[in-house]
Structures are given as C-alpha cells and as structure tokens.
Image (cartoon, rainbow, N blue to C red; front, side):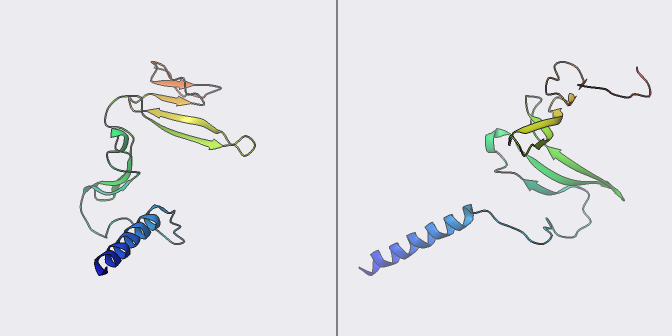
Length: 133
C-alpha cells in the first residue's frame, strides 16, 4: 500500500512539474543570457523551440568578432531552402500578419513583397538609389 501511495505522489509531482513547465512565463525585468565573459565568437544563443525542431535550428546570438566588434546573428536555417526571416505587422482590424521585409535563407530580399523570385532584391513600390550597377 505504501508503494502505491509513493507512486501516486511521484506521478502527481511529475504531472504538476510538467504542467508548470508548459505554462507561459512573464519576465518583468531584464533577461540576461549567459554570464559575463570575454570569449570571442558565438557565445550567447537564444533558441526558439528545440535546436532540432522541424530540423531547422532557429536562434539569435551575440557574436563577438573582436575588440569592440559585435554582431547580432539570426539563424533561420541550416540550408539554402525556403526558410525566411520576416518583419511585418499584425493589423488590429483584421488580425492578419502583413509582411514588409523578407530575407530568404538563400540571401534574396523582398521589400513590401513576398514574391522575391530569382532576383537578389525585389521591391514593391517607390524606391531611391544613389547608383545603379
């Protein structure tokens, strides 16, 4: 009987911890990732989901190239496939996401268009350029 009681307590504990783990977390202060150190290179990664979720690693990181030389890197893919980094807005009236800036994992860019095609840069609308090459 004691064994069943302990098993029930253990099952409840595992279930309760699992429920708490899945809940949203609100952080009311600064979120600091990593410790203060002076390592160069890729050293403070923020993963979204599992590093292998959908087989594409999705993360943001700080990359220190040298003294006073820092990059903010956004990784969206592990190949030159159809993955994209998209900046846009969710309009309050229709609740739909409207993309305005799209960077594909193959390096092609679309501004105010998702139809980038085979061009390196696709722009929908007026644009200004100092030079054309």
